[in-house]
Image 1 (cartoon, rainbow, N blue to C red):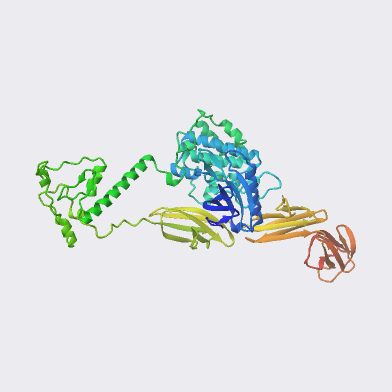
Image 2: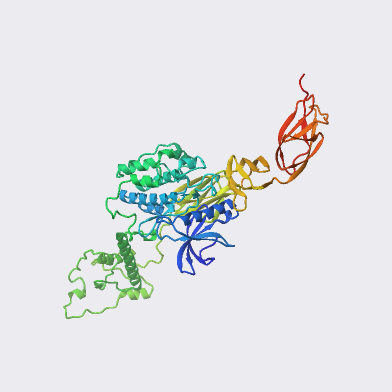
Length: 634
């Protein structure tokens, strides 16, 4: 995978801005146009999977045809010796996921504005024949104008008969945002599935949470999506308007037919904006990144705190050198030491007590008499390596304790930051675990002494699909990650000569431009049937995880074989009649040359019961074909 700083076909990669199941998204600069763009690069481990490559290309086509506000623009698709990628619009602004993490739930007017924008964009995609199938807050960006922009059509399905690329790719989408039909593994999901996910997003922006506990295992979450009754949003956010709540609950109906018929119908049921200038999702001056997420009061506090630190450092240096500490009120009186706390009080507006009258020679002298300058004993003592003398016992105003005024020979020690722990489990065990790209062991395992923060966790096992997620680690806490790894899919490449039809598990599959059907299948047995004008060929194929199975059935090829007959007790039976597909071809023992495909072969002899079976003729088949003829009952 390219790294930030690399040049990819004229685009300089600036930073990684997102990672997904299919690839990595970079912020990049088009060097020719000096324009900021986003590049989505297919993951290297998928580059040799023809089905995933086709899906990646279809995503680019899907996005390119969706020329509408609220959907990220695609500029071009590029394929080089280094990578396959497409170039798209770069949206400045956080994702909805980031915004919800900062703010919690949105106010109803903001949530309603967001819901209208998402439904409008989704409705346009559906009208253009495209399903998203992986809508979630991280795939909804908020631009600088506060408008929602949908991106990452990585699981998009083109609603055309020649682009059914994802029907057999196990479960697609993010578990917590799947529709019931996706959880059940149904192949023919439609626009109603996207509307269910819009309902989940709406529920989350209105309440700050999903209608189930997303921290549970994938199985528990999936069961909740399919079977559990969701509490109304007002359970967690009483201010949700009843009309909006009813629309959200209808979107979350378990059965597709019970949901609104389309996005436009859903929009029509939402309350109209009260004013033309309804509050947008984000105001232009709202923070667009975590670094900018301070309020004006927080910035003011930060400034005051910085000033106090600088003043304390200044006071400490002058005290170390035995010099009087200067402040906004001028130098400290001779014989006294001003502390950082004194100056902090002055700068923070605290009142300062006036010095007692005649507390020093300078105060007792007349206005026209200059105070006598006497050497500072503390400076002499300091030069000889001795500590400065203590302040007179009779005058403690403005003086500090020896501990406060003496120089600190050792740097102040701050407590060590609290670290966290993460426990990682997988089903099955034995997956290699990597945190932020660094291998930490095989599951199950526990990793200690992690600095608080968010880590990217990758679980990989040879015969299973790699799974990537994020884990948040807090100080003095243990995060637990339990993942179920799906078997790595097998890839089939099937064709017929002359051209014909390919069916897998009874469902037709459309060939690509090269005439081959390429698809990913779950490991295990599958029924494959190939037909053409010259014949039919069917068999059960058992696929291993990660296997690539290739077969082109050439119905023009001929295979030599032979047919014999025998009695049940073993003796051969010569001169039995042999027919193939109803045509008599000779008598046993009979040599045959037959075209590839299924043939019905029948062997009969007077006085015995005939035997008939369908034989798949193919190169390398067992020969001769032996038929047992039992005596006819008298």
